[in-house]
Image 1 (tube, chains in turn orange, green):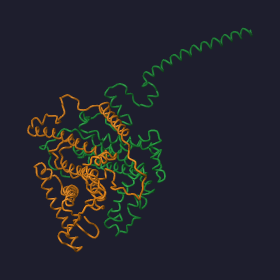
Image 2 (cartoon, chains in turn blue, red):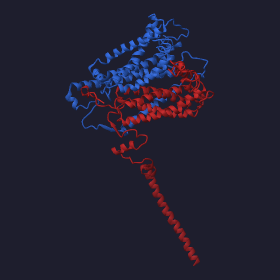
Image 3 (cartoon, chains in turn cyan, red):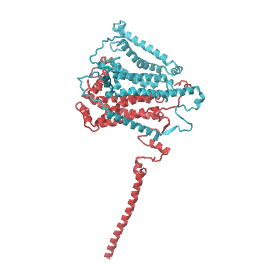
Image 4 (spheres, chains in turn orange, blue):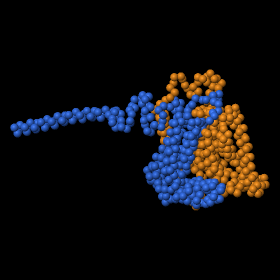
Length: 311
Length: 302
């Protein structure tokens, strides 16, 4: 265990946010899901007792009849905002006094640092370069993520859970987002903590060996099946990808129509909405992990090879 | 006659002077008293009234509402909100903190601009100058850097909270899209700022980042169908981003202008829309009373 190596990585000033994320993201997940569980219990109670549902104020917060439902922004909200501003300022001040922003030697195009990494919030995309060609990992994938995020509210036809924490009423939407969000964070952490010289995999605490060679020969899927002609590879790849979309689409379909509530939501969803959801779910939420596993477990580089692009 | 008149005249002048002095003294005392009164209650003064258009010195409900609605900096707030909406547990305060960080970044960023030239000769030296000679220069740069990192995190958490509470649902779908654009702008702002110190860290991070643009389908010279459409390193999308085929002085200038002018302006515009839509869509989404599965209405036919 090379503690010095590990310390060098996590103490790099620009990596501090990532170490922060390791704590912050689990904390806020717990914080949100704890409230979701409390609301879910209340919902269960009210579903079982329709009489209570008529009179209950339907929140987990304390309430007595006659209490005003609203408060004045001045001072009840503004004091919180003011306090938040002070706390953030103090935090920033302490952070800035104790830790200096990094500054390396002057830019030198003739001296490439190894590894040379993107800013931490884009390291996830750089990590995807291991598994996909740049046109996909660097351009198409981010575009798909942005479009997929924007499409999110338009494909979620579930009327429940608007404005309160819940898990049971929105398993599909929250589950899908959590998978994507955690995948993004995980890729950043792998790219930062576990990638050394030559973008080779080093476990946290393993010494970065600049002379290490990895004797791994990557294969393409068509080669394994003994397909040699260009046409054969193109057609084979197309059908392999098609099969993947069909199989994972079927799997996702089974998953999102398992519970009675999810079936009800599914019935409200139009065909276009559902297909858009499926496309993004398969491509981003299943496709990326699938390709990562193919590469790490079976050393497969490309599935679909054409003269113009490879996937 | 002459002397008498003169005498009388002399006495008269003295009298008048004494009289007027007396009057002046009384008036001065009165005005001083008034001034003291004004200082004690500045709300009564013309100066005060000209700045604050409506009186709200008493804490009646009406005045509390006016305090928010009549103030240009506070008017994005409603006068009153749901009693549970002020709970930290619901909003996590991440949207507001992101906005506050944007203000901090604008403030520190403008100060940094006073010391920075976006040229290959000067840029790196300016950073050294900031770090070692400018009073509080290092603190300024540190605050700008860390506030930027923090803003990326708070924006992500804000988005996470909005998903967990289903706040993107009808009628807030469009505002969610505006939020996604703001997320992208936040990342781009941070990314363009990375190059400006012109050190190895920024140079290679931006080189790695923009090299991906070569591979853009159709408009990159190494992307699918790019060469077939006549793309070369000297006319593709990467060339447009860098103002050249390598990360050099033009790229530095372009990054500077995107970072200091174009992107902050865009972000400010989208933020305006974002906040305005929060109000128009009925304020923040909750904490709303829970809805039951048994209350789901049948499918709406458009």
